[in-house]
Image (cartoon, rainbow, N blue to C red; front, side, top):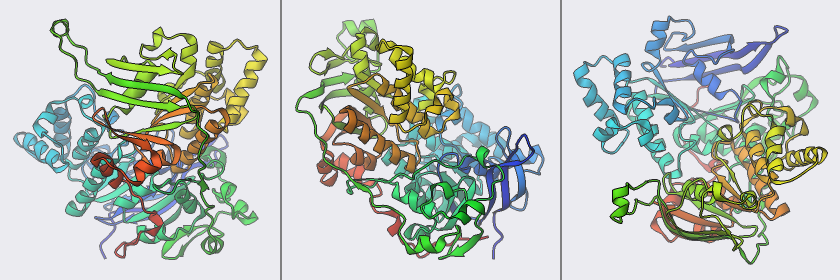
Length: 620
């Protein structure tokens, strides 16, 4: 039997607390990976996936370190070799493909300079062979016009193109192991399919092993033969893709699968109740980390940590395995009820065209019009309606939202709210009452929440801006806002950096609600969230609509999420509307070829029903 390429034994990562007790970020992980095999690490944000991935390269985030255990790559421990050997290993023996390729690429250097730097450090090629090798790699990852791509800066590439450049850079050193940290999270559905197919091809043709970190089980099932489910720093279930997804054993795995929205089901997925146990609160606790959220938890689960055992051809850590296998823990998803929508249009967008180009004075005098990014878009939203905007990156979805919010000028067209408020102008020209009625929730709450302000101060700001309230009334309003988005009042004193991604997105939604808006613009607000957190946010938005009658314009590249949440949908391609109608009708019987192509790229089947007889798993 061939020796494993990567072996991890009883690895624990963390730090020592004030009382010198260990605080675990990753705890007692065991796994092995042979050449050519692919492993998917799945779990919620903060469970330790990325920390474990980086440890494979001998890197630990500031303040963290290895507390116990061993890690071996090709017979050597990355944590014990010299800095020169470690540099050769990173990019040579193994390579990392990050979540955000745009941030990983140097913005001030052309793509060619960055490719050549990798080849200089991690290949034996002569300088004369660097350029041909760059072209070869770009052709390998199917980048169009490689010569032109090499001359560009990162910001001149789309998200999918940036990710392909990152993959090409990772392949430059001909690594035996690829480490991928959520590389397709922010990509649209068709680009995601292309990138995943490329990764499968690389592993198949080059025999490259791969560890793929993601919170999306549907992505993992496409590219990985083995799957490890991680919770609160521990591997709680690990096995082959076929057996693990067809018959999940651990209650947490079952909960994750129940949280995934799927096309054509018209149901709201059930989020996992409660919050994940944070490492700083756990310390050296000996109980099961999932006990506080598990429907099967007993006193034994609270008192002792479960020992790993082999059940149904996979490795599981659970005291109540028999009960989990015998009874279906997943509660049935909620059926969605038809909403009561108003008769009159709340928002009317007529023949909207938007351009980011600014024509020169000469071209303007000659009557030349700039190239439109969005062209001739018309739609309406009724009171209480949720309209979804879908399409690939660059189709104009976010541009339309920014224009309605007043952050981007329109080239032509008309936007009105309630038939009276003109929204065609920039935000600085709008009356305060008009500003209050339309609120925008951004994709990344980290970029929209002031890190130096407490949550209470962030929520008080719109109350101060739009309403004259006494201090005691304002405090009550802040408490009520936190309650509406299911956050405790104690969070008022916290800063955004002390909250999880899902919690920060709830704060961003609460800030929008503080203005008592009539329309909320949601720009990919669930794209980077765990499936369970995403399910909770979807339920929250539907509850808010039911309580206040607020309308939503919801931008997303996830068609299953759009069908779950939205009443109607607008399909965009190249800045133009290709198809529009009720979600149930458009997704059930798409008419336009572009909509049909989007639908084909979505995994419709339940991953638990997938079978693959050739999958193998190494249990250590």
